[in-house]
Amino acid sequence: MHDPLNQRLSVSPEEAARMIGIGRTNMFGLIANGAVKSQKLGSRRVVLVSSLRELIGDTDGDGHVVGS
Image (cartoon, rainbow, N blue to C red; front, side):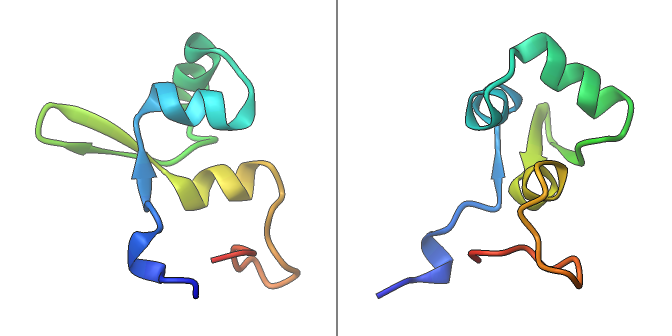
């Protein structure tokens, strides 16, 4: 059964880049221009998985993330 608590809400920029098939430099560019939402947690920057889904168009017609 699907457990929503096991789904990750955020990933490192490096992992986010791998998830969508781009390089680390391109991911930081997307973060810098606001195309991908990220959050600073202490000294660590994380990328919101929902933002990656929106970027690649993995949403339904109402903007809700599909598969979550």
